[in-house]
Amino acid sequence: MTLILGRKRGMTQFFEEDGKVVPVTIVEAGPCVVTQVRNQETDGYDAIQLGFEDIKDSRAAKPQRIHCEKAKTAPKRFLRERRLDGPAEHAVGDAITVEAFEPGQLIDVTGTSKGRGFSGTIKRHGFSRGAETHGCMNVRQPGAIGACAYPGRVFKGTRMSGHFGAERTTAKNLKLVRVDAERGLLFVRGSVPGPNGGFVQVRTAKTGMPAKG
Amino acid sequence: MNVIDTIERELGKPVLPQVNVGDTVQVHYLIREGEKERVQLFIGTILAAKGRGIRKTITVRRIVQGEGVERIFPLHSPRVQDVTVTRRGSVRRSKLYYLRDRVGKATRVTELLGEKARRSKAQDKAIRAEMAAVEAQAGEQEAEA
Image (cartoon, rainbow over all chains, first blue to last red; front, side, top):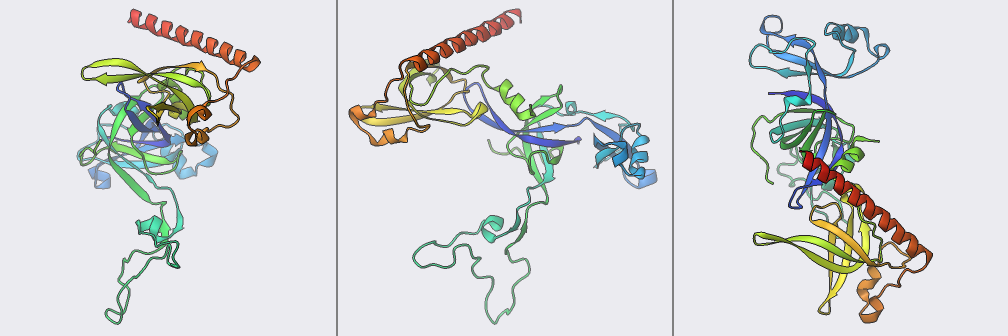
């Protein structure tokens, strides 16, 4: 499994030979630096830690700065780990670029979804709306949330209004259409969680069942 | 320039034909007939132009056997080979949806004449020349390859 960190740049489209439109999200990913290698002996598990996007020395706290100095790089804004089944093949200081991915393969993209604040049940859970006319007063209300004397309470987990979005979301089994190694861009078919400019993690698909289309 | 703009420029056609709302145009559209491909002409008035960059489309309306027919063409699609202007229209709005309610002679758009038309023609000529240049360049590159 390969992992790379990047930022979502936005969506666009292109045409195939026969005129079909392919919607794509552009992810500007890598180069990531291996900042630490974890192993069974010291950590109890195998993993490598990747760093992405430099920040100024003056902006980084001393522990972070020194941590990155061990890999001989500038302090990084994002550090994420990738679990491994066996001992790591990478050494500290190695770079991982988009070339680790191939066009046509399936990938999972993890990001933080757009925050929608306190949302009603229609937006949050896809409830239906009531009629706006004919004297109806329950246009966007949630409807019944339980029965009467028995059970005499509202069940836990009942879908209601509340905070929506701004949570970790993974879009699974997206097709990687194109890889631009020169500029470090990934062309992902379809949409990806989060706003433009948001931080995303791209990895090879875990289950690998292609989506329709 | 941001990444998306740069990429759209690369993915789309380098030059688009110069068309405006109200123009009467011929759209050269590539259609499949069984195994063969041929170019079909769709002749009509441009009602609306929508979208920017690679998503730019035009809505073309014509009357076929007394029935209005509208088609939306993505200008960057490889299926749309060319759009040629046969008559320039003088219009004061960006969407000519009012033409849908009109029948017969009332569906005509006033022709653009005079200095503006000449300028538009000159612009068109310049764009055609640019398109030819781009094509020639592409041909050369292909020959080299």
